Amino acid sequence: MTYGYTHSKNTIITRLNRAEGQVRGVTRMVNEDVYCIDILTQINAAQSALDKVALELLRDHAKHCLNNDEVVSVHSKDKADELVDAISRMMSR
Image (tube, rainbow, N blue to C red; front, side, top):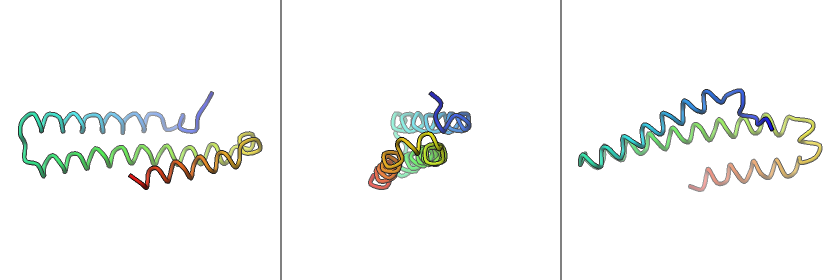
């Protein structure tokens, strides 16, 4: 099955790798007893990187699943509800 993010897969993987590196950086900073505020800044950067991945996936999902006649004809309400639920989860954290 092809998903909507297929065309932006490289961008998503690049962003995930960046977030992974930032999380590794947080671990290193804790191990090295770095100043708390600096660690929190790094955590914020990692969260921001993951937020960008999530937004890219949401955008691709909306474009693919809500603009695809085959998907819409069978699952339109399900796909719209699924998207709103995903957005709601992102906003509630």
